[in-house]
Length: 396
Image (cartoon, rainbow, N blue to C red; front, top):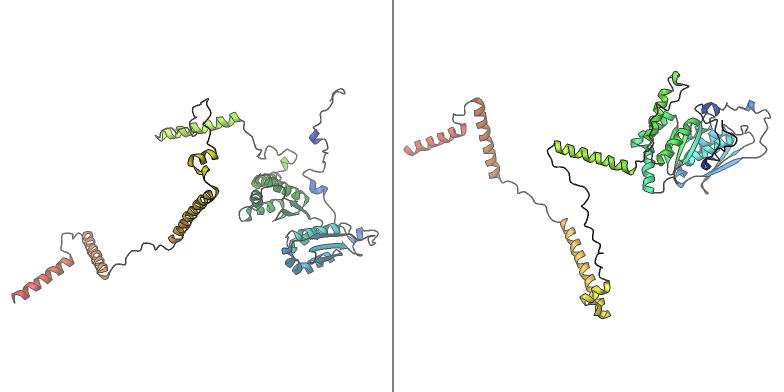
């Protein structure tokens, strides 16, 4: 109890926030809508006024929309809505007719046109006309200023080969399409809330894998009826960033250096030297003043030259610089025309010589393997036979 004299301190940042009693886990029951039929409409009279919505579409979607417009018209006709495709102004419009009886279906038709404009295929977009399906178009273009960083974080939502996006779709039972500076989502209300949280956190530099892991844990916990009335905070991972103090950072750095030195000592290597350069000796005297441009000109004698002489000197310097650059470029171009070093093809005699050597080596190795290394090889026998024949002819 608070004493009547004491004043309750209210945080100014949260003074305008209100309680949201419906924002609980059973939000699906809160948003549950029974199907609306013509029998529910008691008066069964046409609306007093025509309601209409229009939306623009990008130029690259024009060809696709012309091809599927008949399917869009057929889907809207089933709910007694009329639609128009204006290719001149690049817009689509939907409006109620005299037969329309559902007062909310015009908003569903508006969502259908928005999804078609954002790149959702017509077979998926027409599902928004069901009462159990809702959609959310999340604008992410203004969340990150740097273009390269924006593209990198948007790619994280998709993941390698679309694996992250597929995981989000399976866990939330939603259809997610990342297109340009928007993310189009279709699914139940509770799942739309989860997907929006994942996308906004990803653009705020929190990887989607953390949220996916959290959803997987919740999915498993929901299967246990004992934990239905208990808090799940103790099971959920806490990925909050923790900013270290300067002293903690220094202590952490020193621990790493000590571990490194120990590892080097075990390996028999000397301790690593300081990574920072040694401090310079402090001197109270300031450094010598650098010479001015005029001082340098006086020293070189350029200051006393006449204007036309200065121009001629500058032109000569420029010409010399151009000549050096031209020579450098010519040398780079000439490198492409330098023939690579080629090995000369062996002659027939060299080939025969190599073949003969290889055959002799094979015979020797065969003889060693058979245990007849002391015997004469076939080549030496042939030589001796030829010598014997030539000696017999000489005697005759």
